Length: 155
Image (cartoon, rainbow, N blue to C red; front, top):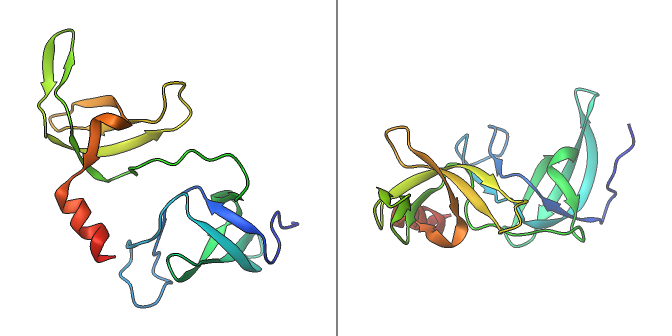
């Protein structure tokens, strides 16, 4: 089990990291670092003798977080940033219709269910708008809901 990254390597996080209860002073489930953040490997260790854990310092966030190898890529690897993540509450910036039938009104809130990153038309999302309605929506037709914006400002 050889580590892919060494001390001093710059890495990018490809998944959101939430507190699993091991980060002191924050509630379990609290978002610690958003996907796309770049940090520096500070240490490499193991967990249960079969998982490599990298201690990564994220300078912008001022946090050092333990990350599994599958959560990291080299910082120099290609990366397309996205505005929203799983569970984010968003609001539409236009009315959404299919074959002329309006399904979602301008300004209606929805919840991000999935991020679709590798599409030729850019980033899109599966968004749940309630009553079982899930639509694939381009990023430019969404904005962060005000309640989410206030929470991000508090972090």
